[in-house]
Length: 184
Image (cartoon, rainbow, N blue to C red; front, side):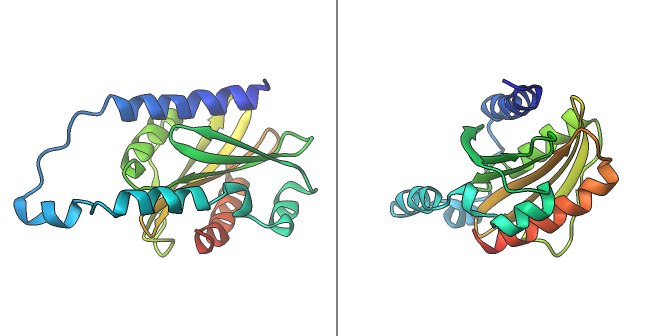
């Protein structure tokens, strides 16, 4: 397991554990409960929708070559309730797309990433329904991360590189997130 895979699994395992330890949210006012309660048909539809989205199909070969500098194989996995696709070039530069079938952990992911990177996430107006960007070091890698919601789902797009600066990676992660959102 490369250091990249170890750190990636560690970060999102921590996210999954923090989601499991959450206290119950305060009760919603009665007029909001009906709007929040899913119908008996909604759960199977949400599961079918999530199964229909392959995170490895959310970026094209051309988009990946532009980012990574060459064509590379996708590696599919799961982490913290997300379907994950990772593309890694021989240089160590990686693009990661994480797909969540629900936005229920969007806020928790923001808090987890802020703690991990010891920084404040920045809102990204006009991207999806809500979005933020954050970045920092993940082991020896500069890591830019953009999280966004659309249609009751959310994605995290990350670009990691051991030789690049966060300042150069953040705009790239933002640009890669735009086509991903059009495909979910």
